[in-house]
Length: 77
Image (tube, rainbow, N blue to C red; front, side, top):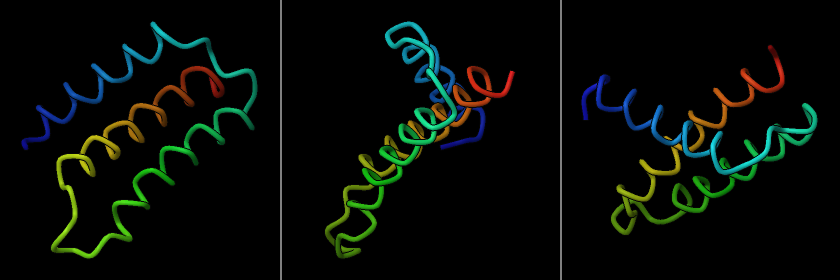
């Protein structure tokens, strides 16, 4: 996947999140959401390499990137 394709995927995920979920109420809530997404990726990382679902791993990583951007927008701005 090229960088431009990743940017489009992250932007799509970010726009869906901003449209479907209320803004973070606090820095703590935003951190918790990011941590939840990291935990979901961690489950895949802990799977034996030959059994990993790379499509699911990519999806989780894209969600982490989108939530990090949401954090900046909703908490840091």
